[in-house]
Every structure is written in C-alpha cells, then in structure tokens.
Length: 84
Figure 1: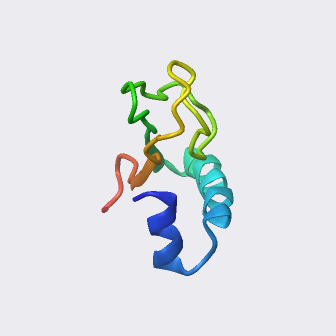
Figure 2 (figure 1 turned 45 degrees about the vertical axis):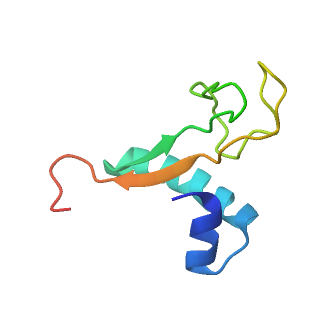
C-alpha cells in the first residue's frame, strides 16, 4: 500500500504515516519481521529510486528532473519461525 492508501485506511494524515513507518521499520528489525519498501519510480524516464533511505516520495527525478513520480509502496513480511 502507498502512504496515501494507509492514511485513508487508518484515518491519519499522510505525513503521520511516514513517521509511523520509520518507527515500524526500526522496531521490526529487532522482532524478526521487516518492512518491505517497493521504491518510487519516475514516470518520465523510468528511473527507480532503489538506494533511497528515506521512505517519503522523492520530489523530482535526478536523471530527467520530472516531478511525475510514483509513490513508494509498503508491506510487512513476517520473520522466519512465526505463524503468520
């Protein structure tokens, strides 16, 4: 799901979703589960923001300067040895 989809699902602002995702990302590291981030992509040239550490959507593409960028998507995967 995108941050916007999560925002409408749980009834909080999109900015707050990113704050919570940062916390979840750090917390899951210790519990075995992890947050999977499907990176944002430039719709103009296809550049994929694979090495981006920040979870928020980038402002513009470093290759073509387009501001038409897909939002990153997020999902949670359970760690090994869990029942999920």
